[in-house]
Length: 447
Image (cartoon, rainbow, N blue to C red):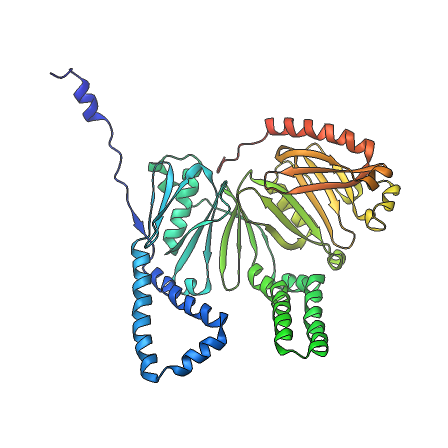
């Protein structure tokens, strides 16, 4: 016997749509087929003498047979890893299943997604595919989907951001990618000139040119010279050519889902600065940039690896972009910074002049550096803890450091403050942080 109306209610209950498993782009096996080949190359580089002896023993026929076996095996490996990799977007999570022998399933909660970046290496741009990278709260390593079709990657990115913002699954597809308004674009000429005027570039290049000849005169060992010269040349290239290629055509745009950053000469990257997740903004001013009024803006973002906001720009332009990252925050002028007392010179001769502090209604701002100035801005709402530190020599001269810790596991310090001032600052900053968190905006997309 059935109760009237109960069966009708059961039958009228809406059914969940079936879960759709999706695969990566068919070009993906070509990328993954290189894994077995890379293992062999790594073994050969690790022990070149043994590799040379083994190759000398092989005949031409044996080499051809080995290639005939290796190439199909690599192709089969790439196909199987692609076949056993799939993903799906459910009502509450992004589910990624990978693994050929050992299966791994990643369950990524949609509300914990902080950034979704689209990257396109050079060959991927030629093939019309892209890689999707996800920054998730509490995860040290980015999960990724490589590769998807370029349009599919952008559509999936827009869907994930909409779902993370709280849109219903049936409407997330309709939201689409939010429009962006360009705030800044770095000219290639300014970027190249800024790298030439960076001391680190010339320092690593000078070390690469001076140290190897001196090492050769001392040891007469080719291997010692190569082991020293190659890392130094690599560091010099990374600090100059590498940065130019990576930061080429740097564009910052504003959209409802955060600030968008597009850059790259060979590999194009489309990043997003998550709203509300910026813990610290640093305005860096190298010595040789000051005559031109240029600065660099760096970030500490909780749950994200994005670290550069502006590679080089005039100070007023950079400060306007900072105001979009930290709404309601005005960068304090250098004249507003208070220096440590003169007796701090006993603790840090000459360099004590590079330190400064100003606390406004919105931020805790501390500066350090005499040749390369760096002004760190920490919104009061982002301060997780505040502490006072004082060594024995600092106690002797009645100075102390006040350090604030942020949610990005970073610390900003106001160095060499008067001991009484530091104690008052400690109490006042704890209260500012508490009231700042009460009035903070929610860390949500498209709010």
